[in-house]
Image (cartoon, rainbow, N blue to C red):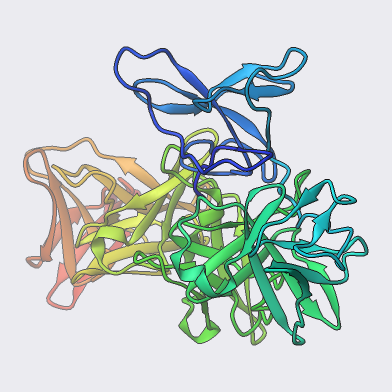
Amino acid sequence: MKVGALICLDTTGGSEKTAGVVASGVESKYYLVHYDPASVFASSMNPGEFGVLKATENDITLDTTITGDKCVDANFVVTTKDGSCSNSEYSCTFLALPICDDTSSALCNKAGGSVTLIAGDYCINQAKTDIYKAEAGVCTKENLSQGTYKIFKCTSKNKCVDVSSGIASLTGTENLLLYYFDKALSQKNNGFYYLASQRLIYCPAGSNNGACAKVITKGHYVNTGNSNENDKEAKPLLTIASNDDASAVAKASIMTETYYLDATSLGSDGKYSKIIYCVDNVGTLVCTSQTPREGYYLNASKTDLTDSLINCRGNPVKCEIKAATNDYSYIDEGHKDYIISCSAGSCTTNPGSKLQGHGYVDGTTTTNPNVMITYDRTSSKFKQTTLTLTASGVHYVNALDPKQLTTCKTTGGCTSGNASPAFYDDNTDSNHILTCTADGCISSIGKSSF
């Protein structure tokens, strides 16, 4: 899941600054960043933690070797803190609204009058029961209706403004706080999702509990119920579309028995370490995030062949979208003994044929294909078999249409078509032969096997 990377701001104010690569020939720079658990810049940071970004001419990476307190110079470059900072000491502690100790005075004095907020800034009383707004000549308590959410954007530990009505314009680089009033005031955190104005805000758990940000990674999220869309049975998923619009997905729109990429697991390499599986459990639709095994999964959010498959490989296993090809098949790793087959621009998954002699043309390689999928009775599972091809060809009953014969030759790969009535060697078992008639093809034990 990506959120924007925002440079930490000066404790006394300052302006936002986004990290970028340095110009050619310029020495590498280090930027201190706040909550950014899986951003485009710092994907390996844990939710709620701080980190230092190293900006070079070519890229921006997280430098985990830099520890301790930091100073930041006028150009936002991190230096090691030794005594006091010669320029600005930066802080990332925007985890709650500033405390206003004196709400009776003009402009909401903070910390016993040591800091006076300016008009438009917000603070919270010491008991954290009420929110106040600094206005011209007065410190005004916010009268919140039951069920009200308030979102604040903080650019320093003493400057937070209300952006509740401007959620749609958020870019993802903002440091946000989320409060909720329901008879009593509470701050949202601990992995809370807030969906409003077609935008999704996330407040992670972790050591810096309280810092929130707009989610910018497109894709699907499991609705755990820890959100303002708390009916996870009616709306099991949250999603962000390609146009940045977020929404809750009703269960009637969710494709069961297939898989979604889990957007929270998107890494800096563009691959995913988790997938979401949704299943109907006695009338209740349940969606969970899972660690995948190597193999192919049918993509529930597919639109056409170009995004029909989820391909998971490697150690650790990472997943990405893979295009499928008409008239090819794939072993479905998500369902035991199922085969994903694609034709006429669409892919479906169904129980595979375990009949003797039956085979599927494997879609892993579609240029001169020489791999078939067959059921192995020894291991009791479907497997891929790389063929030793001949000019005359090796033969299988087309598992998708038993009236057809699949023939794989040295040139041209594997093709399927209506078989001429005849006998053919069964390439799945040398003791069997294929008998093809006008009604189709079957495999049986050859005479020499008796």
